[in-house]
Image 1 (cartoon, one colour):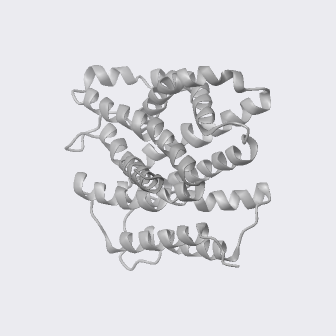
Image 2 (cartoon, rainbow, N blue to C red):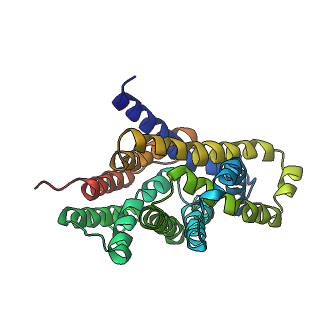
Image 3 (cartoon, rainbow, N blue to C red):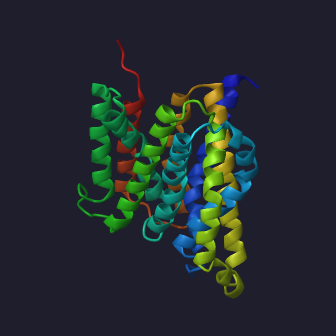
Length: 300
């Protein structure tokens, strides 16, 4: 199989994995008839705890790569902003938002990455990128119903939770690029997860997650979905993402952002029987257009 074909295949698999993550979050919180199983906080804690356990052996092997406490600080920043807090914010948002909408809002990560890079890391912004940001803002207005004559009833608080998570993702990405360039991607991920493994398990125990396993008949099934989310949606997805970068480029790998909302919408409609509105489709098209403009190269 050629390098290009493998790159596209890995990109498609990654989009399917990350696009299905929103469904797996809901399956961890609710049974098939909508009954509560784990709370959103318990799902977030379990996801981080299981992922931390999986990545722990790799992190322990890479501890010798750390040379000073400044690197520890940046690794903790990447772990908390890139994984820990977003895991709780996304599950909280999933209690009120559809999986498709959550997937579309997640595509704002490149925009905040660009803005934070300009504000704090002196990165230039091209005119085409500014236009892309403006188009994306129009997309979010459509999604929350500001420009829609028949607005979708959604909670701005839960939309804000996802947007806050994307800001944290952007903080993590800029930190990796400008403060941890001496580390490889797998080293960064494994070390940050290693630092978070113990806090994640403490939070899991504090939330009395074990009582759900004892009292809810659907708990072990939900735990299975959460485990899949942790192993595939967090750990395996990271390995695939790194492989795509090695085969092609970071720019090519970032195009997975365009595909995730589409996967999330399709899975949300067919698996969760979520409603689909024309404004969601329009908002998705506008956001994807904005992402394309932000990431496209200027012609000289």
